[in-house]
Image 1 (tube, rainbow over the protein chains, first blue to last red):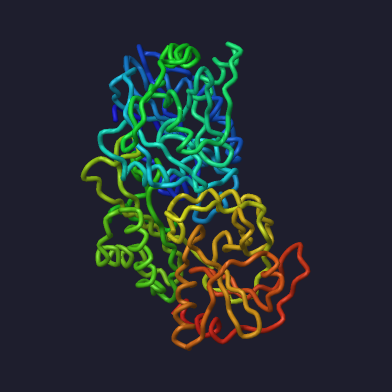
Image 2: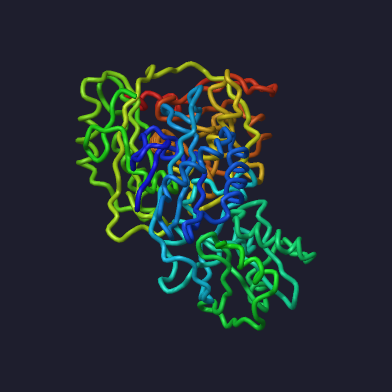
Length: 268
Length: 268
């Protein structure tokens, strides 16, 4: 870690009463810093606000968050900025104390910077549980991802995760797009999964180009019959999948124009 | 909070890199302290070890945990002791750093002590998601309980939670037993829910009495047709349910001998 701020103060500790630690009661964002600029700040803040709204955490003060992000990034040309917002510190018990105030935890990490190489992926044996109340938001309850990552092959970029019903949902740390011919698809995230900021960027670029990206339920067979696959992530960018470990699959086409166009905006 | 220990040192802060905060990557136990004694210590430690095993967290050093618990409790006659074990502090990313060392967070809270009064409960509108990989253990991913508690009526002891398929699983903070005639039942916890220490105590007492308690899937209708209901929790003890808010249900029998016998061991 390069440096950190907790509630605006240069510190690297939080209260043991913080509900982020006690219950995973909060949200996070991971942002790319490229050429001294925090990428897609507004998009990350929109998702963070939506997540706070879903969890009933008071909406953060966005100008304050921006000021703290700038203060932390300083003259760092390239880095990964992580922002954790929790419901705050509160005594024991699921019910928060009256007047609990959200905590802001900013941390800056060294990062190798954007990479555009195609990626080799695998398929996780762990399954995502369903919970519509928590689906889509980037909350701090991430044991499913921790366990999947712990078992993941070393030499893959990410691993696809299926849900209990066999639908392919996302990567451990990224969203998935499937391409067949010129048609692009992406898994529905209304029962599990995280609505990534880059996923939303791709959907918005498609809309601007009058191209429909179809959200739906897809099986591993659908994945293996795709002409191309893409994984999206705020640090990883938009990555063309070249290989799926353990499966006889190869891409049959090159970068789709919508994803190529979106890729130009990820780190700008 | 009365006082706390972090990795054996009197402190009330943890690193912001602790994976408990970052991902809810850990477990907890809440223990009753009555007459200067930590209740059911061995049972809590067995569950904690089982949870660590499930999450791939190195088993804690039990004599060390006991020594720290004693150090924290000191001359407190009556209190609630919370023990959080996390995978430890590690840089950004789901994969823990090599050699990460688990963190021990002990905190002691004031507590009113045992209560044996019958309780009024309600039924939560929130549903528990299924994930067999996480079912049963008392991990730190507790947003489902936080959201259920936030909506819970003020004047009830706890609220029953159903899963996505309409099975009654547990209370927000307790396990459930159903009684029909002299037969006792308890929900299966292989897809969601927490295997409470008091639940296990009740099952063991039943076994010692050659009484079978049947684990199975039960609907809200099954609950409403029960002669008696009990909620179990390490601080709450074994509580007879007297009323379900919003439902025309009343107990039709008195304390079952197995639950009455188990109740004598909860705080001893």
